[in-house]
Length: 582
Image 1 (cartoon, rainbow, N blue to C red):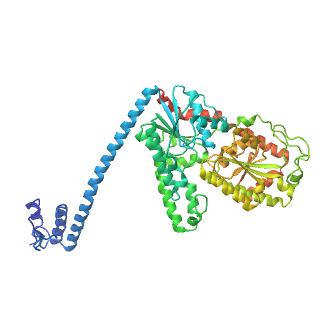
Image 2: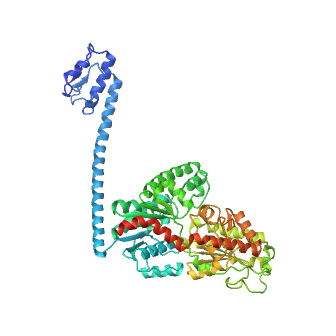
Image 3: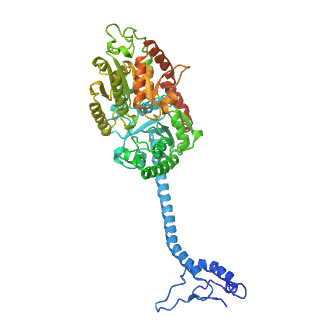
């Protein structure tokens, strides 16, 4: 008769022993029931252990359990001995972490209450580590501040910036010079010391992940320096949002210029297309491309979770809206707020038709402007046609494509000295740091290599008035960024009266260079050859045809004025601001 002897397990009562008796159950059922009865007890004591004398342990199975069942029991005990301590340790660490986070939250909320009592009112803080730069994102920052200051006089405002070596007064003076924006009252600056943690140069590999993690450290530095009531991320650092919301207890809002990761980026890697963010050695290797796709997918999941913390989400274009809705999944809290473009400074310049005798088309470009007066409001006499590009010197702006396309245009013109001298490419933009300055030097070297250095000029960090003169005197406004989120430079070119040639993607394609009242407002291209051909087409148009495009383009830019931006921005943030001012 099969029976179980187990002195060391007194928990096994006589009732289950009877169930294991072969007289009561068949042998197969006896073995099965033995397994289930013994399973929880074997987790306490191994059936196969021996005492020091070498004799079998007092807990033995004489005939009841087969060898396979014994092996399963032993493995179960081993697994339990490993998992149980880990589970207990994980629980203790989780509880400790929760207590630490709760303590930090209470501490930060205490600091916010003390600041409220000291200042006598709520405060709004903008996170903009590069606020002293001269790009479109900085224009959004200053226009947002101006709108909120005018609307809410009882609220104080703070800007978190990583700029070093400058004072707050110098930053405001730079905003006035570059954007013609003056704030109605003072703004406080919190100078962050660790901006390098969000620099792309700090992360040669896994740049997105590194910068995002770095932004969390920089956000923590900002939060501990000043705890606001409303936090606005105006530069696209989505991973700072949960820190301010859950640790700082702040209301949070975000203005998204460009999604950190997008389905278009995934498609580039899947299709193994080399780009500025997809190195050649990765695009040529199918294994590395697969790994990068998995990396992007995992990062997109984290990015979506971080972005979904925002109470209010504002995006700058239809293209950005589509990607943010797909990633953050917050349609009820998301709206389009077109960025502000200083179109008023250009709209008072009259658009006069070019003198037919001065411009006889592309074929006689070299002999144009022999004598005679230029159009009213277009500035100095032209010696030819100027092609101007406006945009920060960042890799995604693809200034290399502009230079190469311009070289192809000169090749199409031929070797005529007068014709070559009559064309000039002017690259206008801001440099944020040493990396951007090195990029400009690389572009200068490219011009030398392609033999166009005598026809290309670089103008860096120029004042607004000089930018205005460059746009007013240009014939073509050039833009080459693939999937540009919006394109403030494109709008400024259209308002100034230049004929825009933009990349056939993103904001320019969906929102800006679109027909206005069934009239053409510009041109689109997407390669060196198509850019060169489009520039040739524009220069070959009659003055009357160019004037018609310029007029339609200027009329269309009223959608992107400062006034429109401020109205939409205030409407989007009204729900949050009303809670602060109650």
